[in-house]
Image (cartoon, rainbow, N blue to C red; front, side, top):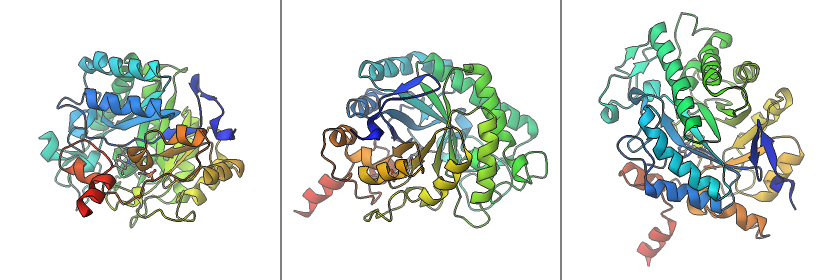
Length: 367
Ligand SMILES: Cc1cc2nc3c(=O)[nH]c(=O)nc-3n(C[C@H](O)[C@H](O)[C@H](O)COP(=O)(O)O)c2cc1C
């Protein structure tokens, strides 16, 4: 049996294999950000399909930080029993589920929230560009909102939380010189730009305690002009590790350019497209590294594991097409994921429906 199917533990969270469903905005929450029966069913299918750790789509910690319609939210204690029902169902199927916490900052969508976005600095060209620049008090309130959301997540039975520090959202905006032009203690050198991330980790920890898994999704690089570069991200990763994170999921790119979810992954070279950076992060980190981005083949994941690129392998789009991919591989059917990486699954999302793979539907249309 492949080493990737061995059981592991992350700060007390037992995982049955090294495969992670990377956070994926499902567009299936209700108007209050709560889990609906259709979303619960999607997570149950992933648990039944053998995914070791499911990470939910972005869940806003406060309503003004929403980015998309029908997004999950953890901004009110009323959500706790509703999420508890869902996490119970996952546990009954032997699954593990973490929730991804986010504030979108300049990517907050006033059309969705009806509220003025809070931004780090004036930068043109984003949904929230007309927003208000945050004071240090605003930053402190957002840090607290992350802590409160993590408390709700733990109370609701989530096995872990993941702090979203990637893809252009607020924590990534702090880290990124393209978004962070601040001259106070939260701007300037990478040590300062990492300060908000560290304070969020510490606040989350103060609510959930030491023996609860807290994960972090980090950009290796932003791949935008003037954005976060690998050298700075390596330094941020060390500081984040020191602040007490239990695992880092390494990604890159932003939703602004779409580079976080590259298209046309049709050769092994194109797979695992942040692997070169992952090698460098693995060399300096002690906490487990989860690698995401274009992973489609079991043999490649095994090779990357054996050669010390990553400890866990995260996928998003492949599970939209095949919730049972991990059990398929475990059963010996080693064909690569059938996902076409064409991103057409975004279509139904943008129209307000929940996410699903449109490939079969389009093939029927052609006949
Ligand atoms: C439709 C869609 C929704 C996504 N939603 C999220 C999200 O909520 N949070 C996040 O961190 N990444 C999100 N991503 C990015 C994925 O987690 C992942 O990093 C990226 O798609 C690359 O992995 P893949 O090649 O396995 O799809 C999303 C990607 C897609 C295509």
